[in-house]
Length: 554
Ligand code: GLN
Image (cartoon, rainbow, N blue to C red; front, side, top):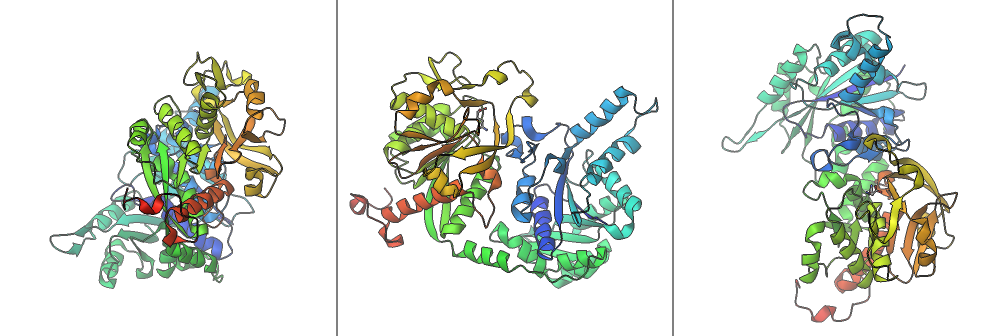
């Protein structure tokens, strides 16, 4: 029998329910259980694919081409399972399904209502992940208890326990215990109110995860236990941790996985978290500073590049490097270049993106990294930008561009493929999900992967224009990976440069804390070498000419 854990949040949004759920998932997996995760999102968008990254953070892409909430990225990275689009359902997709069924006449003329029709559809979404191969499904309910939008979800998960038996369901409520500076006290009232609200919907939490700045005293835990009617050993404190990788260890220390297993009758499997402990030790030991410039359009909301940042950190942990990110607004890049402010970067990442704004800045960044021998990694739009830069500045193709940004470019080196031209539905035009690529034997990319056939996830409309292939093939820019049928260019790299590599894919979606994505791993290795060369005290690298005579901080 598959067991279900539901995670809700209260008091404020942004408490890290996703990370709490993922961390618990990791612990259950460390007990030998097979875990899968999902997110129910109370907004009306049918999927996050068309949502503005400024507002909602990155769109996480699954192997099967789902455009999902960024929490699925946390789930995959922590639980180390590839999820599918079935792991994300929004109010919009649920209503769409119910309304479509109503139009088909499936309800035989009955009045269609939130209860039972919407709630039944929610329960169907939860149940579709059940299989013989899964012991535990952790379902995070997005939003905050008390929101209007969340009510059908709370009603559905309440009914769910009655449907499948009390012993098969566990409710976790994540709350905040704030610290009031003037009185010097931690306050439990918001937690009490939030639990009262949850109980008014018929859900009594089995455990409460209390987020707090500083650790909670046992007195305070007892108070929460008494007032919220939750056993003291199920009042779990997740005080702010130095790194997010510590959260599974904190929750384990607090006994959360034990309580869950006891209540759900999952047995007392020994838990093996030695690998995760080793990872946390490596995170703490990663000390060589490596400065990476991330040239983006959405830099005011770092969550817009969550998987890219995580992948850089994974690679940093692997090499013992402390990644110091410089968020660079693409539109400001040219000014910064003129002031020489990019000189001290050890590496440049040009991530994915849509729309024209900031593109010229990204092209300038690509040119600078190429000329100054700074390692550069281009992801999706990043690869397109590198291609445009090289075409303009090295192949003499004046006005080269992507037809996304300049439909009248004389040299559309990036263009729509035939099959994409006439599609107008924004939701359905992209190359989405995992695609295979074959790599050029002996290339830098093939060496990084250690394999010649690789699969990475995609999310884009435009492609390297095959009409320009031969011009590139006669240059130092190597087309080092292509689709199995040879039609699409998937990877490029520059001969004779320490690391100037672009990919049409998004390898950041497959990076894991203990298994950095190969291109990120090699990019950071190259950036680390540069960092060591720039600062000989850090390592044995060569000292760049003139480096020692520069005044400090220049
Ligand atoms: N805008 C580009 C395209 O649609 C790149 C997309 C991306 O970077 N994900 O092809």
